[in-house]
Length: 380
Image (cartoon, rainbow, N blue to C red):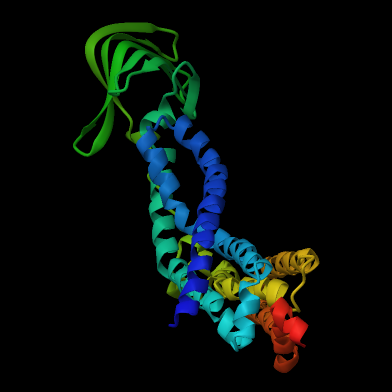
């Protein structure tokens, strides 16, 4: 790679990294707020929140990558063109492809990075995040007990606790259990703690009492120092983690196990997600093509390129919206998956055609005349 190529590439890399970081931060903020409610309600600590937020980053980076690349390329190329650095490159005999090649090299690298994220990193991180959120939802303490609230985690069961310490000790515990035969049992305890015994969860109650009302109306009272409250019947043992299409690897999407009922009913949806994984990275090349067209697609202008930039931004937005529509439509019709590839490729082809449609000789003569010195003009 020649010196000028490295210079142009270096001018593009830094703004792209800053744009990706800024866009990812904004997307991460909005996503983390939705997870924060669930984690706080589940009584989890900050470490669980940070873990879930970090696992969401690969998908967010992939989402903002084309837009960030588009914005960074517009800013950088517009500055280079306004400062007449690109004009000097053309006047020095460089072809259009030589000038825009560093931009497309960067776009190609980000396309490969996006593909790697789509095929391996995103599914792995989403599965790990799904397991974290599943553990939060099914956490026994958070399901049974919430500080200062009466909860009904199961039919006929009411639980109240004044507070839960950081070490897991539950204070001033109240449990009311209604029976099918019309009887009821009430447990009160100064403290309680969730423990595991023989692989089964048990809520140990300390320094409390039980009041049991029989169907005949007889009240039995018992005080205790240590009482084990069995929790097996309140655990939803049939609940298991269900991986959504975004959590699955490519082979699980394109070659789904049709012997499973859910996979059979959602076969087209899985196919659409699989093709989207392969087609989405193409938008990095497409958006770079639109950015190059907006700045280099015409002659040099001292008045700026606001109009072409606005058109390029509109085309980019419409292209991405059409891509989302194609994914949605592919969930009902298989052959529409072709549109997921055709939309970005057709727009990329249009942008490159617009960039190269001017005759090289005319363009070089125009740029040469613009950078001629005053002495040369006087001599002419």
